[in-house]
Structure formats: C-alpha cells, structure tokens
Image (tube, rainbow, N blue to C red; front, side):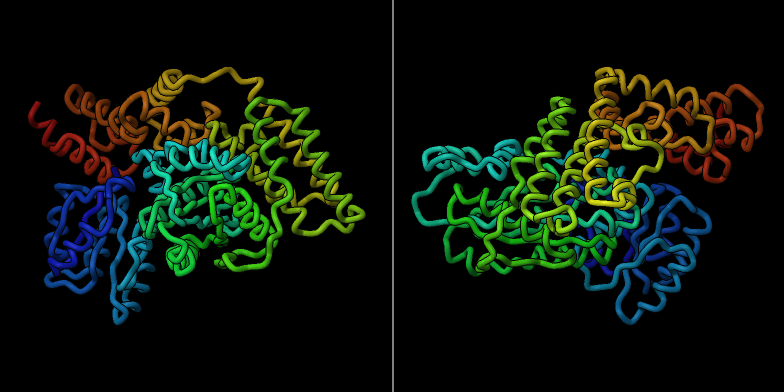
Length: 523
C-alpha cells in the first residue's frame, strides 16, 4: 500500500479526509495524522510515509515550512499541499521549491485521488496493490453490445442474470461510452500506463455514479469504458442529468491532461442496447474529444458500421489467425473504398476504423502481458508509425503488418506460468539488487513482459509486491554486512543499491524499526 500522512490543524477536516475516500480500494492507506507541521516532522521518522498531504495554514510549523523540510531532508517523500483560494500563490511558489502538487479547496475527491496517483510510479503501484475486479458478467456484457440478444425471452434471461431481477413494469436503459484520446496523453507512447489510468478512472466513475436503479461498468475491445444503466422508471431516464460524466471529463483533463469524450444514448429495452452502443461509438468516431454528447433525443441514428470487423479482429488475435486478420482488414478497406468511390475520397471518420483496429491490437497485447517494445522495437509509438504513412492505403498495410507481427510473436513464445514469472523475476533481482538503477522496467524488459502483467503475476505468486521484494533483499544483505563486517555505512549502502546513505538509513529503520548504527551496536 502507498502510505499517506495527513496534516491539518482542524479535526473536522482530518475526519473528512479520513472518510471521504475508500483509501484501500485505490491502493492507499493513511499511516498517521498530525495536527501541525511540528508534530508531522516528529512522526515522519516513526511512520516514514510515501506521501505527505498537508494544509498550509497551521500553528508552530506551517505547511510551507513543513514542505520545505520534507523535500530537503526526505527527497523520496512526496508532498501535496491543500490550499484555500487566498493561499493559491503560496502553493504555486511551493511547487517551485519541490512540492509535487497542490489541491485548491473546495475540491472533488476524484481530484485528490488523481493527484496522488500521478506521483512517481503510484498509478502502477495502485494497480499492483489493488484488485480491480471485472464485473462477474463481463463476457455477457461485451456480448450484449457486440452481438445483441435475439428475442424477448433471451433478453429476459440475460437481464435476470446480469441485474439479478426482471420486472414487467416500464423501465429502460442509458448507455454511456467514454473514449480517451491517447494522443493527448503527455506520455501517450506508454499504452500500458494509459490503460492503467483507464482502469482507475472506470473505478472512480463507478464510485461516483448514483442513479435510481442499477448500473454495470466494463470495457469494450478498444478499452473504452462502457456504463450500462438500468433505471427503475422511464421518467428517471429522461430527467437524469449526467453531471457525473461531465465532471469526469473536466477532472481528467485538469489532472492528467487527457482529453475525453462521452456519448450518452438511450435503449428502451435490453434488445436495443447493441444499437445504442453502435450509435454512441459511431458518434464519437466522427466527433472531437473533450465533450459530453447527450444523444438521448438526437435524431442521429448513424450506427458504427464495422462491429463485425471488430469482433472478427479480436477473435483472430485470440486464436492467432494472421491470415484471417489480414483478410478482415482488406475486406474492411474494400468496403470503405466502395462506399467513398475512391481511396482519395475516404473520410476521416472512415479512417478512424483503422484507429479502432490499432486500439484493439494494443489493448490485446497489454492484456496478454506482452511488451509492445519487445514486439515492435524500443520506443515504438503506433500513432507516429501510422502518421508516417504517405497514403491511406499505406496506413491499411501498416495495420496489417502490426497484426501479423503481434501474432507471430506469440506463436514463437512458449506459455508463461505465474510460478515461472515469479521465479525468473526473483532470480534477476537476487543477481542485480546491488545496482542502484535497478527498476521494474529492467525486470519486465528482461522477461519480455509488460510491467502491469509482471507486477500482477509476482504478487499473485509471492503475496508481496516487486518493490517490497527488492527492498527486502537489500535490507537482508545490508543487515548481514552490518552484523558480520566492519565496513563503513556508506560502503554497505552502495553495495546494496543505495547511493544516498541518509536515504538508506531511513529505509533500513523503516524496515527493521532501528537504525543501522543501533543494530550494529546491539551485535
């Protein structure tokens, strides 16, 4: 868990911070509290948090003074300031001094969550430390939006299975589709990181959403977020405002600089959900990002024309059918060319179908645990690769190449079991713990796996995170050297992967409860 210290001189605000978020569900834990900066400095040595979340105006030692001391003496601890509007300029100055971020009161709890997750590698740690479970009816929900249901009886059975009940009284559905603009993400070449954000944002939205009825949140084949809402009455469908979705667009833009578009469509019954999804997807494929499109009463019934191709491509990736994937893409291309008269007349909207094919491919690679860099080369960016194509036809050929390359990679790779992944990772760490630059990226690169998959497999097998294992190995080696040799503390720190002896001492004390010097004296 990511350990948080909260500091504020107002007990009511401490209580609010303590209870406003289900901290553990996002990979956090509040390890301690302090009522002012002086008390916080005393507790840092005892609890050694990962993040200090502090107010500015406090007695004895204020938040700015606390932040200055923490960033100077504990450079591995992150600091976030909570500030009022009248303290805004102070907070901005503090950022220049090393404070990681600031939150202005009043704030949405989602702003605070995203601010905390942005720090260092917290998003990856959060995904590693929390089990964000897919809905138990994940496959049925996906089948519903892509294949639909055949008749009223099948719809009734499916509704009972997904929502646990079926009612004869009039009710209805709203479907919300959230699409993220990968190119707007400042680190958009890291698709794995973007998918981690999408997982956490889906969870945040589920925690935020309140309706008169039930809802299910899941991802489609492109990793877009789909929210299917079943309302208790038709009147609730028409009066629902959708403020939660508008808020999410703004919060994600402000905190992560990721543009998001959301389409809201209506389905009077479960048999209409597939059509509602097609309408939402088709609309978002033609429109820009950063807006909330309410299509409940829109006469725009244009559907997404290539769901069959999406389903086929996803199946080809699962079954490693490179030839069929090529045929599917060529068939899709011929259809687009026939619809537009010539290649030169193919519209931007139609080209988005190739973008969808890329999204399906990247989502599949990451979900399978593979490394995009290992398949396509270090630093590969699908957006840049596609933008370098001179003609639309070249873009199509490049998509075919990417699909073939990915399928060939898996065919040439042996099955990897969880135990084998954990064992290989342990062996690499045991042989390289003394390298101060050792990172999870190094381990994932050595094993040809993406970091999210590696973290998940290791924790599943070892019941601890990779970071915890690395620290444990280093501390055990350091303890052995302290108790059996006369080496200087600086030399021991360097030999176990720490260039900063002060930081090493802090980690050691946090791990064993005593300082390195105290342990040496006791032996």
